[in-house]
Every structure is written in structure tokens, then in C-alpha cells.
Image 1 (cartoon, one colour):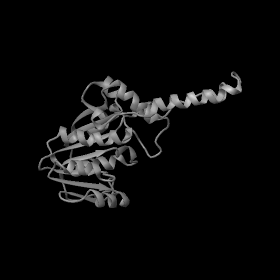
Image 2 (cartoon, one colour):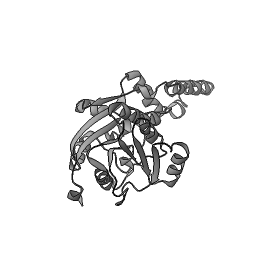
Image 3 (spheres, one colour):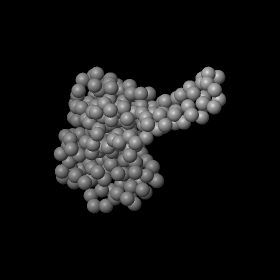
Image 4 (cartoon, one colour):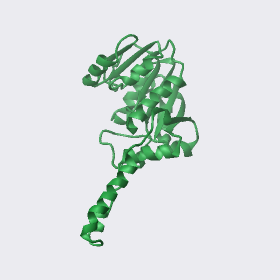
Length: 257
């Protein structure tokens, strides 16, 4: 799998280890194709996935629904999402950065959570965006830093703890970073054309190609290579490629209406 797939799936795998989900009702808010909901459903009492995309829910129902796992179409920012229902755990990974009305999304998380429930929110770390990507993701409205999470989420929850997500092994991290960014730009074509004989240019271009492949191909990393650091301090959190917030003690929804 590529870096993005590993980053996403590892959050679900971590959640099944970090939280006691046995017998609990779980909501995956913005579930996409549904494979993460299925991972949660393997260890919880009841798993529910919601996404605004009909195509995504159709795929989820075809491949992952059944038993204790079900899926529904719904706007995660909508005012009547799953009205009257409440869950022990609400998860949402790699969703909030895609939402223009993320405050309505957070309000729904509060409304859909039992008073003693837990909301787990994960997204890319804004401070690392351009370390891992050459350009801004055009599908992201807003990315968040740990500093922003610490100031935004306490408006909705009485207790917020932050977790950093990253590769613990430096060599594996470097390999994943290079693969995700792609090969570094070279100056062979523009700068060396007038400096070396024309007969050597094909050889230099071949060397450039081989070096680029060595930097990006054959990167061997897995979901298990990703580590999670709970409240590790600002210096570690700021350097992690992903941040996760564990939120409990939801505040009264009427305070934000």
C-alpha cells in the first residue's frame, strides 16, 4: 500500500487496540468506502458508517455490510443526521479537513455521542503538509495543527487529549516521505546541456532515472510500522504527520445553537 492508505488504515487498527469496544455502539462519521468501519465492527457490538457519497455507501454495502455492520447515506454536517440516536464511540478519520462547515460537523459529533461517550478525530498535521506533499491537496478546505486542535475542540468537549501519528523508525519514515513526495527535481536537462558533450547526456539521464527509482521504488513499509504517541509534548506532536484527538465529556449542544 502507499503512504496515504497506510496512514488511514493504521488509525483504525490503533483504535481497536487503544479502546475497549466490546459490546459498544460505534459510528464511523464520514466512512468513505467502509473498510475502516468493518475493522471497527470486528471488535465492537454494532458498527455504523455514514457518508454523504451515495457511490461510497453503495460500495460499502456491497463489500463490507452485514452482521453487526451497516451503512447509510448522510451529510455529516447536516442538522438532522441520525436524529435521535446516540453512540458510545464516534470515530472520524481524514474527514474534517475536507469540510468547509467543520463546526457543524463537530456539533453533530457532540449530538451523536452519549454523555459518557468518546469522540476520536484524526487528520493530517498542517505543520507537516509541505514536508510530505509538493502541493496543497485541492480537496482540503482546512488542515489543522496541534495548536489549533487544542483551542477548537475544548469548545465542544470538556476533555481533549492529543496523539501523534508517525513512523517510529527514521529510515522507514524517510522512505515513506520520499515515496509520497516523488523524486526530487533535477537540473540535468536545463543546466548540464551546455556543460557536457551531447554524447554524455543520455548516460546522465539514465543515471538520473536510476537514482530516482532508488529513492522511491521498493519502499517496504506496512501498517504496523506506524506508531502512536499519546500527549508526547509539542516538539513531537508538531513533527508527526498525523494528529488524533481523543475527546470526551461532550458539552451541551444547546450552547452552540
